[in-house]
Image 1 (cartoon, rainbow over the protein chains, first blue to last red):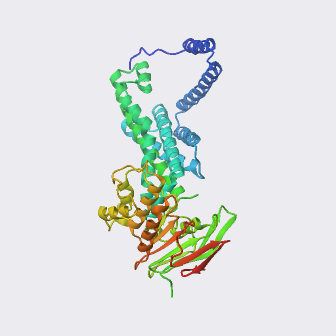
Image 2 (cartoon, rainbow over the protein chains, first blue to last red):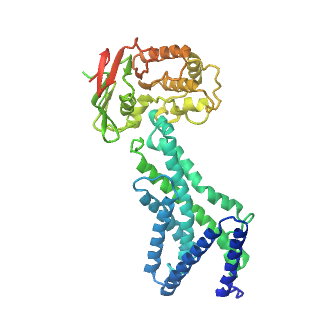
Image 3 (cartoon, each protein chain N blue to C red):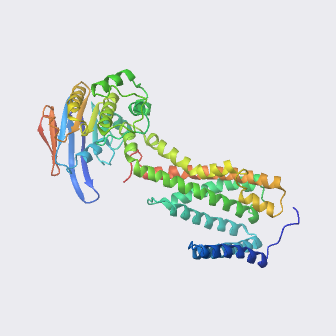
Length: 259
Length: 226
């Protein structure tokens, strides 16, 4: 690590606040009417991230496995809630299904990345485990909610096609193949786009952060590749699990659709 | 002795409150064409869906050609033999061929093969002879969609067809030929059809007539319902 990392203090944050204020002023001058909203979300960002920072400082300082696992557990619950909040269709048990999908994906992929790839020492080292699992949750959440929304939408608007297949003797699996495939594909679109554009159109946020913090670029690239693959794996796993759980709940064993 | 086809007792409801019919048993004779009639809203579509097992029918006995299905057992296989043709002629996205051939790609159709020549003959018979099999179905007219859906059902050739207003949307010059095709198809050994009709003026020559009205299914002549 290079020691040139710039330690950020209040003055630096004030300077950044000046930029947001300038944007707000511009909005006032042009009568865009977003000044109030901009002020509110800026404040929200500061408060949310500030709280997170305080919690992380405590967790890092105490360095206890129970605290890390507990925090991760709370994060999965919020992630599942947020994933369902973004869909327009609901069904009884949807929160449970979203939670199962997101925590299974995070557990599987998170274990491999923190224990095998990064080799965190001790295994729960909060400095690695929390940000990595946080990134997994944030990204799988998007994939899971898109996938779930698309799947339930399909069941709702294309019920006649599903029943057409059933009417000619399709099994539950045969009747669900198309809705499941389309839903999982939809859930993976943002991630595929991000992977295709990485390094050409955009410098990924994590890599930018690492370079700013003083890492050599190639090291930052290696981390970014690990992160991208980790997100690809967790989003695909999460999307497939949530779609299958939803399919099991919205259809009967013979394939007919629940009302 | 059991009839060739028996399904019931069936119950149909709208939501949790309104009962359309209950304790209804449908029987069909082999090689027969039976018409199901009744005022709209009486539950004809619901009855066909219940027979096909698309809505739950707890306790219903399903019996076909000497074989009895356990309640709610192997419904996918039952549906492949007692096939429901929905009223609005739903089609899959894709081509005419995709729509005619998809049942043969299901597990239920694995022992059979899609026969393009036979499909062509049936398309001729309903006046769709000029329709290219590779054409997309998105821009077919309502009448063409209904005739295509009818051909698909007949080509699948299950023992029993449950057809919900198969002639709706088909213009009068064509519907006589379509009706004739259904009648000939049904009056063969090992086959039968139950057809919901919406007074197109056909159906008087059917072998049986069932009427669903006020929650009761009655046989008008031939066929039987209890």
